Length: 193
Image (cartoon, rainbow, N blue to C red):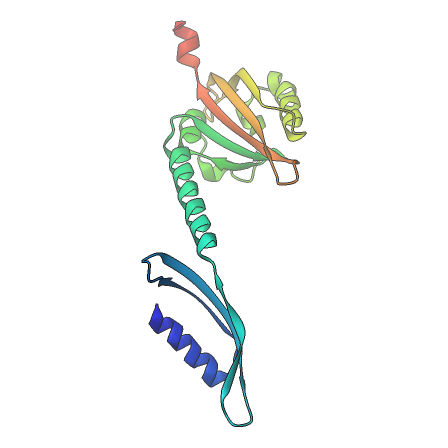
């Protein structure tokens, strides 16, 4: 990365524009270090360039960014590959996430439900007020819930599903939505196994 470092300095020197650069170096110990430089070049009366700026060691931030990206990748893989439906709702009951298992269980493609209120699509009319009450309690941040309820597929087939729901909480402790993990247990209920 030395070349990009030197090229960025040269460009800032020639143009007089502020210099911002982020790159990786290896300490003499062999440890990888990330640095971020920010400076402003100024020409003195004699033509010399005087730099006013600083270099910051951002290695820890880069390690955290990498750890977060890896964690998000693993979570995304888990959500995509689990046989359980994973549904994320916002506080308006609009679907934010709908994994392949949700597609398989309920018959709706992801594109059909994202951004839409799916509760009426999945719930028989007779159970709608009960589910809306549960969702409202979750949106208030009241603990998680476990339900076994009758649901409907896109084709109108009635199925029995086991739902595990929990509110998602923002940094201020306020509920911002709900995550639901759902399993179709129709066969288990019907056969008694």
